[in-house]
Each structure stands twice: as C-alpha cells, then as structure tokens.
Length: 399
Image 1 (spheres, rainbow, N blue to C red):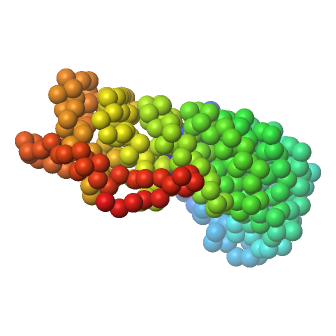
Image 2 (tube, rainbow, N blue to C red):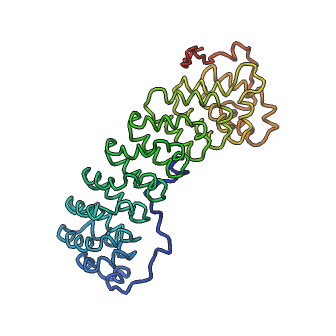
Image 3 (cartoon, rainbow, N blue to C red):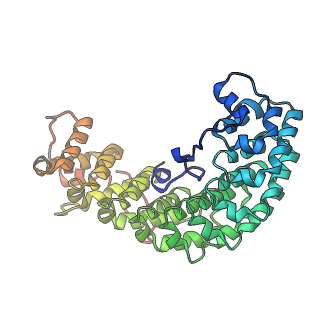
C-alpha cells in the first residue's frame, strides 16, 4: 500500500549493485558453471564452498540447481563445509543466500546448528546489509525457543535497530514471527518515543506492524501517545501512515471515533494538506456509513454557509481529490444536496484552475452534461443531514 511505498518496505539489505559483482574467478568449477560445459555436482561444490558461495554464479548454482534437489547425504556434506565458513558467508553479498537456503532446505537439526552460530552476533548482523537477511531467515525457520534466544540480544538496542535501514526489518520480523507476549521489550521501547518514531522513515513501519499484530490492550500507551499528537502526525510524511493505521486497525473502543471527530473538526485544513489528505481518504474508506455521512456533511458545511469547506477544497491541489471521492460515496438525499451545491458553484469552477475542472469531470461521470439541475428548496437541500446527540456521540438520523 502507500505506506510501504512511501516509507519503504521489503526485507532490508537493498539490491545488489553492479559494484557487488566480483572479477571472474579462476576456480575451474565456477568457470564450468558459467560455461555450462559440464554438470558440476554438489559434492564438488562442497570442496570449495567458501569460494564458490561468494561468487555470483557459484552462489546461484548452489541455491537453485543443487541444494533444492540434492540428497540428504549430499546436503549433509555441503552443510558441513558451509558451516565451517558460516561467519564469512553470512555477511557476503552472494554467500548470505546460500546460508538462507540451508535455513530453508536443511533439516531441523541443521537449522538449529546454524542458528546457534548467530548467538552473540545478532545485534551486529541486524545492522549489516547482508547479515540482516540471514537473521530474518533464521527467525522464519527456527522454533520459538531459539527465536526468543536470538532476539534477546536486541533488548536495549531496539531503537538503534529501528533507526537503521537494515535493522528495522529485523525488528519487523520479530513482531511478525513471535508471539506478542514475547516482544514486550519492543513495545516498551516506544514509551515516550512514539511521536518521534512515528515521524521516522523506518520507525513508522515498525509502529504499523505493532498495530497490526498486537492486541490494542498491549500497545495501549503507544496508542495514547499517537492520539495525543494525531494532528501533528497527520501532517507528517511518515506520521500520517501511523494515524491511518490506528484508524483502521485499532480495536480499542473509541479510538476510531476519536479520530473521526478530529477529522471532522479539521476537515478543511487536513483535506488541503499533502499528507493529512491521506488520512481523510482513509477515514472515508474505513468509516461506517454513518461516519462517512458525517464527514461528507462537514465538507458541505451548514445550510446557506457563505464559504463552506467544499468551496475551497474543490479548487485545491489536494482537496479536489477528496471532493471527487465524496461525489462517488454520497448517497440518497445527501448525494442530491451535494450535487446541487456543486452545480451552484459551477460558474466559479469553470473559471478556476485545472483542479476545479477535475470536479466538473467527476460530476459529468455521474450526470450527463446539460442535465437540468433545479434549485431545491431548503428543506430538500438539508434532507438526510446527520445530527449529533448532546452527549457527543454521533447518531445518524435518516431522511
């Protein structure tokens, strides 16, 4: 989704650059793999596993052609050879893939032994471009007892990992793979830091994973901090994704309703902001029918209001997208009132910039050009409006 696109995503480590490709090797087995002039068996590769695994062609052959189809005996020989060079291979641009393949295709005992080699190095490897991939694969592959042992080395170092371009992926993997009662130290690291981390290009990712995987009761203090600064976060290029996630995924009673109320009260300011407008779109998408109607009402303003938010939004660079969205979402009498209100401003729209013309196009998609629009009496124009109860709880009153 947009959050992953804007704030990054993937496993970490980046893609291999052209500078990662090493000069040609004199190893005859590697040359044979390149030339494909004879079949090189895994047993032969195992004799030179360190050199071959660190070569682009050798690594690929060991992964795809050999390890996946080898017998258990052949794998055992190759495993023993790779284990002897594991520290060297784990942080190598090509060698790390061979170690990952052993985590995938090795026996349970082989995976246990490989994970043991990471003990004492998890933090350093988590910050390494290639080592972080092996740590993540280990967390995918070993039983919970070893998972807990490995991530225990990250206690006290969580924020350092989160702020690192590679380490943040390891923390996300911890959240995704371990039972939530085993990652309390990750949740605790956010206390007093939620606002700062939500506005961090990697921190926002980790908060989103916590919101997705943890019970809202477990991250209650984190949610409180996010809600207290939600307007500030909504206008941030990364923080807006955290606000969207709270709105969509929090199961804590009242969180979404609180955000919906803040959105309604600041509808114009947020709709015309590059990042906060994303929050408005999310609110329109994940709100109930009644909540959506209240948001549309906030955009339309009060009856006979001289400058309703709609008037500014339909000519704004970002706000016009919100108006286009509500044209498609409004229903019944509220939809009729919205269309009438837009047609009432048609002369201004026709004279306005390209954004205003987007609104004209959106109207034409739902109503043919030249269709008669009669000025409705006030009672009809206010039909279907949503009323709120005095206690502050929103209720929808059908027309």
